[in-house]
Amino acid sequence: MRRTRTAILAALVLVASAAGTATAMVPADVGIEAVPCTVDYKVQNDWGTGFTAAVTVTNNSAAKSSWSVKWSYAGNQKVTNYWNTKLTQSGTAVTANNETYNGTLATGGSASFGFQGTYSGTNAIPTTFTLDGVTCNVDDGSSGGGGGGGGGTGTRVDNPYAGAKVYVNPEWSAKAAAEPGGSRVSNQPTGVWLDRIAAINGVSGGMGLRAHLDAALAQKGSGEEVVQLVVYDLPGRDCAALASNGELGPTEIDKYKTQFIDPIAAILADSKYSSLRIVTTIEIDSLPNLVTNTGSRATATAACDTMLANGNYVKGVGYALAKLGAIPNVYNYIDAGHHGWLGWDDNFGPAATLFKQAATSEGATVDDVQGFITNTANYSALKENNFTINDTVNGTSVRQSKWVDWNRYVDELSYAQAFRSQLVSVGFNSGIGMLIDTSRNGWGGTARPAGPGATTSVDTYVDGGRYDRRIHVGNWCNQSGAGLGERPQASPATGIDAYVWMKPPGESDGSSSAIPNDEGKGFDQMCDPTYTGNARNGNSMSGALPNAPLSGHWFSAQFQQLMTNAYPPL
Image (cartoon, rainbow, N blue to C red; front, side, top):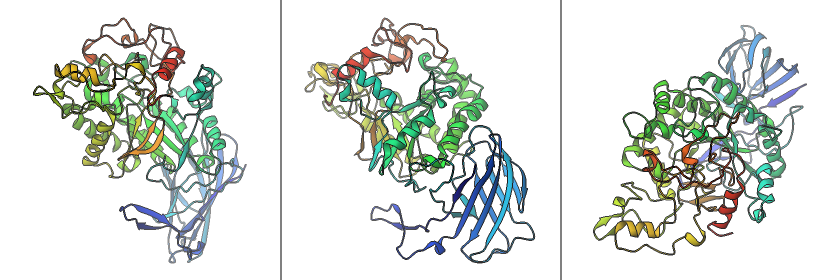
């Protein structure tokens, strides 16, 4: 087997657009000689557990008397022997320095060296090389490593959804199409959930990550294509909701890194997929739980206190951001709860600060964060049109209603836009964008109010006019009366990269009663329609649908209700 990745792209010149955004442009008169350096990395022999590689670096800038070539692996490759270079490795980072006899590198001159290494899993070709700190541009060509795709720039765009199709998961599409009336939405793009280690290779004969990426290449054609992944297997996962407990114990951070994130990163870094725009939703619910369900709060759980104390949520998110963010065509979006979770003053600021901590841990930086996603797998209305947070009824603020309960936000759009500003204020890049999951927040059908409620009291005004028909804003499991929301679309509002269906409609949030399983999923009473509630939902009824299967399993009755109550209507 022989694979190659050669740096032969024309140099890019950054110019500022009218909006102040740096835009990559290639001047017409710039030829290959203007590239500061090129690197030709060839895997010469690969026997499944080890390989040999040859590297040639060409210098197109000023002559050098010494040189240093650097790259990083997405997998667990380890260099064991080398020649014509002094080579060192720290973690995934490799540095190859010249020997005393080959340090001279004239303008247009080349130097070659080689090495032997070991690996397990996937031996992905490195995507980025530098010569003395200057990036050597890498083309999209490959030989023997699997073709397909093409067109990858290796440079992230401001909004991956802009001008792109989004991957339609054929497994979800088939389930939706099999439902009466399901063909009306079965062509919509949804997220692919990697919620356990086994999902990487596929569960029970289903599609694994590579199969989905291959299918995305087939759907892509000559245009741009986004693939949406949910990365969701932290140790001690979802410490406040048993229905989505995971397979890893609270202390199994090393297993999370080496058996979950590393294999995902190795696959995503394969040059075969470099033309795809890969959007990752990073670990839903977990960081928000550290804000609201720990310490002296009435909503605290022992499991969340444990995860706050051992730091493994923060470490895990940071590690995932760093590993996946090193891949040029991956776009990381961190889960940011929803307005009915983090919209209160004592949650809003601390959440942004905690997210910054996670995004700068384990080698991650804010540059590894494309943005944030709100309302993932939840039901909060996108826009409440019949009342605003500034309304008063008989002198009483809407904030004092039982439904709003002193929150500063009444819907997801206002929350997402405000939280984006808060995130920028604590140090995230000003160009970050937000995603909003609209898969189940339409709240249409006959129960959708046509106008404001009666002004008898602030509660009759809010309850009579709100689209969100949940019993309590804290209810989250298989909610009765919910409908499909806005269809996925790019750039729908200021600061919003896209409305997405990250949670595939029709997949259960959790079982209505205990069901033995080998998926690490417990029984959460919030999924029981007879449950009378807890502190996290104001001791209200759960509002859950009956007869639900395990989380992630197909729930036909829910899917039918979502279509019936869709808004905009189908």
